[in-house]
Every structure is written in structure tokens, then in C-alpha cells.
Length: 355
Image (cartoon, rainbow, N blue to C red; front, side):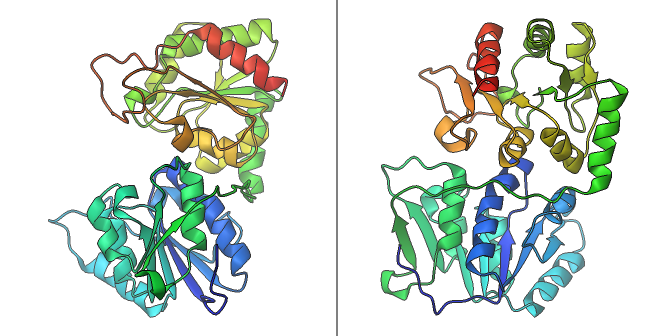
């Protein structure tokens, strides 16, 4: 792709408000921007839960909290207006909206950045978001690009007035591992918790997911954990975030009880580095493990593997291929896409451990 070396942004604003998996998928693009423009300041606009993670990523100068989760039409607009004023004072040369929503696109535009880049209407979650962009990335119709590769394309987009502000690409982007600088406090906490249970190099099972349609049944996770410990002689740790305690308890009731403890995002990252494998659905912890180089086995339901699967060639995906596959539904009357046998997942774990 031809670039324009004369365009050397001094300040860049990344807009990716959430969720964990989506933020992780945007980190290789941020790293690419940092390599392309090592002298530039890169700012990131997000929601408060992801600030600790982003402050540990090399190349990010400042993390801003947008606070739209707490905002409503009945709320005062003063904090939001104040935020926009502070953003405009930064005089960004470039803003990139990796979210593709009306609210994220509007904030990118209102930041006052000279150039606002985003995806074309066909690739945004809300088609009208693209009207806020001065330059757009649109994949070719025949391409099936992973979201990491889409984000990388947006990162290398350069202003080009000769094509009316829109640009198409061919070929595949290259993702990289994210060199996350995990604080020693988080790493020490994880090591101590593992030592208390006399566990070394466990396999992580993460049964939770943002959508119920992405969750493999808890009783199957229990069976898988039991087989891993009994047949492979490898310890298992169940990971979970806030609000997922009931899923963990359901697994524990199926017995025997397995090691499990809540973690912050940074503690989860440290736990991934202490582990030999993670098994999970299409969820943030899975993608965090991939970004850190931890081997994974993904149990995929309504998501397309080519778009949302682990972006690492050695990782294994288990998925049923049905007429309704890749529907991206958050609820389902049949719920058959996650009806995957324990044997199939266990065999995938064995294969991945030997790669």
C-alpha cells in the first residue's frame, strides 16, 4: 500500500471504549501506530474498567475516560462537554474510531482532530457512524478479515484526497503479540494464590462470556476439568470476572472442587503468563491470552471463526457448522451451536499441548 510520508502526526487519539476483547483486538493496531510514528503521542479514549490494562501498554501516552456508561439524557452534560473541551485542547492530528458506533464516531469527530479515520458503512456496527469520518477503510467484498487485521488496516490508513476519502485494501494484516508490562503487584498476587493451592503451570478454564449464546454449558466444563486433572495430571484453575460467580459455583457443585479465584484484568494477564493453556469461548479473557502468547482452545458458537477466533495459527477452534452458523445472536430458542461434546474439546486440549 502506498503511504504518504509527509503525514507525520504529532498526536493521535484512539477511540475504543470497550469491551475487553475488542480493546485487545485493537492493541496490535496501536502497536503498529507506535512503530510507524515513534515520536507521536498516542492517547486512548475508553471506559474506566479498562484504564489499568491500557496504562500498562507500551506506547500509550495517556488514557482518557469517556464516562458514557454512566451518562443518560437526564444527566448533566457538563462532564461530557468538559471532556470534549479538554480533548480539543490537545489538538490531535489524527483520531481513529475502532468502535464503529454513532457515539464513538461522534466523539472522535468532536475531539477536533484534523483527520478522523474509521470503517466504511458496511463494516461499522452502526452504518451512520461512517458519516463522521474523513477517511474510511472498507475491505473488498470477497475478503473475510479477522477483526485484528481490520484494525491494522485502519492503523496504516493515510490521508489521500485523490480517492474521495475512501480506500480499499487487499492482502492480510499481521498481528503481533502485545508486550504488556504487568505490574509486579499483580504478578506477585497470582503467584501467591497459585502457591497456596500448590499449583504450577495450570490449564485455565474460563466458562463465562458476555452473551449466553457464547457459553459452553457449565456441567461440560466440570467434566472437562475432571478429565484434565485425572488423565493429563495437569492442575486446573477456573477463572471468572464480576457477575460470573454462579457459573463457577455450578461447576464446583459437579465436583470435585477446583481451584478458582477472582482476578482483576491485570491479574488475569499475569495468570495467563503462569499457565500452559486456556480453554474459553469467544470472550475477552480468551483474546487476552492470545495476545500474551498463551496457547488456547476456543469453543466457538454464534461468532465467525475467521473474524473472531484466536488470531494465532497454532491455536485450535472447536465449532459446529450449522445452517444458522455465524448468526451473532445474543439469544436463541434452539441453542444448538454450543452443543459440543466434552471428548472433542478434551482431544483439542491434548493436541494443543503437544504443538
